[in-house]
Image (cartoon, rainbow, N blue to C red; front, side, top):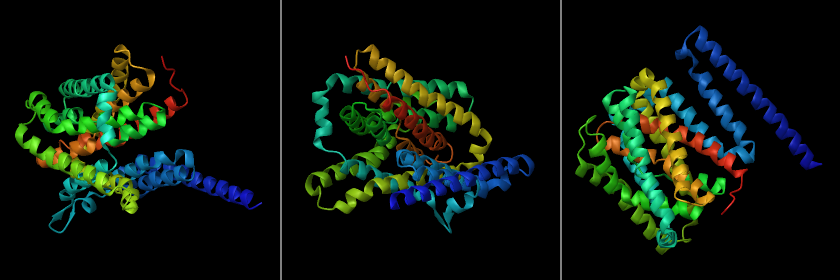
Length: 368
């Protein structure tokens, strides 16, 4: 009886939140159409928050809620940017690099020597994945940037996303979809550690016509943001694994919060540019992201990779470390322009990646 009572209460709550969500959506549309988008801030933000609550009420959909937390935060920063730029003389963009270093430390604590040993166990998969990662996205990004007609620094941000390594989100999607998780972890680890060398090389080759690129300065910046924190995380994991369970439990949540803060701050800093070219940039980012999935998957199949490994490579290629790209843009002093493409890419890739993972999950790989 108590179980039935709880189910009844949950269904009533779900219905109530659903009605609120519909009302907020309708009110947002009416307000934008009649008064103007400037007056719709609380309604739009409330709409995204209500979706988060709805998703959290359904355990099988709870994993999608973080993306809508990001949308709510981005909406808040677009409507009320002053609150997300700084306090007094302190600018919040100064938090971006420290937060990235914390995220990379967390990534290191989740790694082990086994992730790198995978190179020897799966040499073909790692080689195919790395070649796809560092050819498809940089050159697709370059082509899109040229064709987009966007301002040079914003176009350079598109290339920067393409030249970045894969991110931790790809590991989650590989797990959900039934792909080769071991290969995913290995590719993410190796591509991240290669980033200080490969990203500056590609940026100096592809993006220098848009903005001046100092490859050595970029190498040093990426090394500071990536290599040192990851090595510290690896050492922590090796020497102190299991001794601080609270840290193990909190690091994923801290990383998610850090990503949300980074995207919100960049959106606020580049609000005016984003409002003027937002739809074009969103369209460009979607094409870039989907091209990564499609070409990554097709390339793996052409190389006779099995289905689960092909899915993994699709995610590794299509889902970039947009947080790292944002940090590089900040280090270059162009977070409000070059940082926009990474800020848009992050939430959109989570939606597309989650959708693809859910679709593949219902189609179990048929191995050769």
